[in-house]
Image (cartoon, rainbow, N blue to C red; front, side):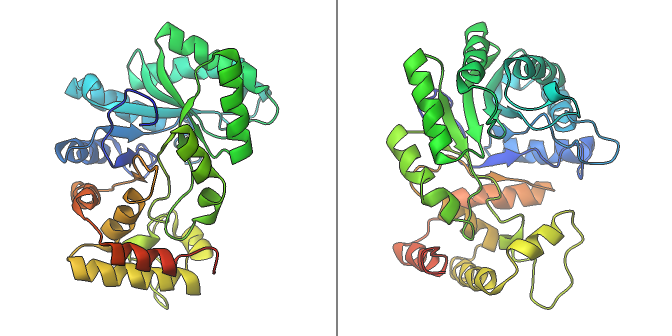
Length: 317
């Protein structure tokens, strides 16, 4: 992954539902199924799931920490978490200042019940804090052994370039991964400027919303009631339009040819894209996780890839 020594599986399990829509028992069922299917890469964040009533943040990390302690498998999994999203209403409870990063990493280590984080990511860009301050803080954490590598999420290409330049100039650790929004529908934001940059700089890419918040699972249909899920309204606003359903129809056609599921086709397309390390997916059951990890065994033909690229081409939309 990037220029790191992390040997990660091709599908990354997202932990955004842990401690929210999946409780401890259900989350452990999902995690066990993921590992049994050959997965080893789990992504979470300190802010998951602060938005849910009764939650304060760190909920997903606590679930993961208990699971790893009970299974005794910390050395077998690669844990990625994030810092920078608002964790409170005070000025020092958000962003990428040294103060917030140092305070937050200690909480994440405590919740995860570990003494190191494999991949520590800036959840979002901070236009106020000098990039040198942020990178120096990360550099110190790597030197202390509390963090192995760092990554960026939701960064514009010019800002990622600015950070990479600062790391090179000051001999600080650099962002080795990027976590962007990227799927068959949402291509332009990544492909226009970020893709050329990450290919040139050999940065690993772990896209989120790989299935369009579930749209490419095929469970959203025109003229039918929306699924009873927390994300349904967002899916309706973003994906449920003429272009979205046209792309989905092609995905389903190819899935039928390969005796695969629409989700597997959408993920296989991502895995075939240059620079992609491991798409992030969220599983809600053992069977669901097994289906998603099964996408790594689906090999799309050049004709399949061409058809998907054409139907989702952002330059012609």
